[in-house]
Image 1: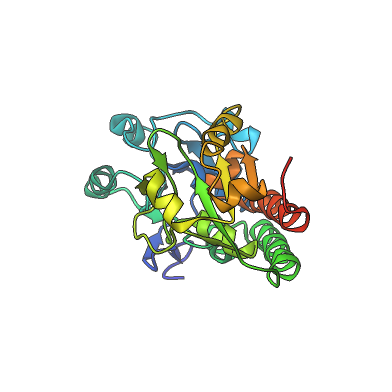
Image 2: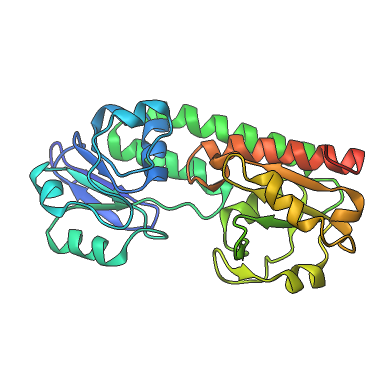
Length: 280
């Protein structure tokens, strides 16, 4: 505390933010940040967010002020937020700089691994004054991650191609949260050495690395078609063994608690295919 009623909080970027009072008017500029605020118990204070903020379902009722690339700056200012929560890892840097130049307090919310989620929730709870709700959510996630590690961490580390788009083929690099999900499932991303978050790769590169498993993390209804394309390459170990997984849970690409639920489903699929040697 710096003065009566004022607060000092630290965000996920280790920046100290001083506010005259606990924020009652919060704008979130990332779907993941919105989900995290809800989980931290701060839902009553969210006055604006961006497109695709649809988790939990109650987030759909929050007014939209743009998307992750462009927001209505005049409307943001007119809404008189006490603080704006931004995503430095994926938001628009120019937009974040503009908000800062307007004198709006910014809170940077960022998770790079699943293990970062509980601490990030606790910091948001400290920001909103909802520590009890945030602590409950944080402990729930810690227990679920510990259970995943216990259940799947000791198995054989199958090599996996995580395909997130088909034309061209996009996968995930070593810094992507999905790589961490695979690691927790006892698997290994074959492109974990790539520094890009979402690199494009060609068929030859996949054949050269010859994964044990191919996961088509696709939009609803598309995964089977993606996997059918790989069946044209019977020399691939994943194709020969039938280790092809259709995975259409979009929570896997989110940066909030729903990524844990999606990771649990992914681990179950990989664990099942590891046991049976094939996926239906």
